[in-house]
Image (cartoon, rainbow, N blue to C red):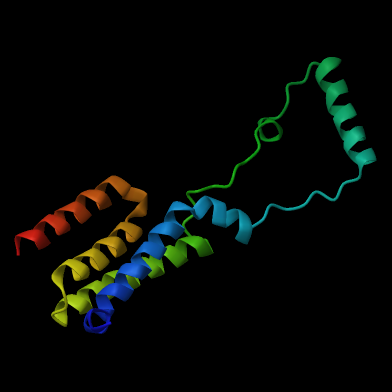
Length: 145
């Protein structure tokens, strides 16, 4: 219990950092829950008429299908302005700041660097390989101190 009280900023930063990484890993699944696709309110009769018209145009009039109708747009993971992106960026930044504050407060350097690194990984999730490299570098540097 004394250990937790002594290193509270680093432990909280590390926990928040892991939460941010979890949100970043599962961001596509979370987008489905927060931004569900629009429902199609057409009746079966309307769908049947529409597909019959398309079939007649393709078979007898030799028209090619329009590209937009053929391809269904999946959820775009490159959107940078959605709520899930803001959540894991905010959590990652908070973990990074708590790691720095933990280091300034002279808490255990390994916990401080781990909190800082998990925050940095969450912030740089789109550049995962770079984030892992930087995290390993910080862990190695903390072991040398």
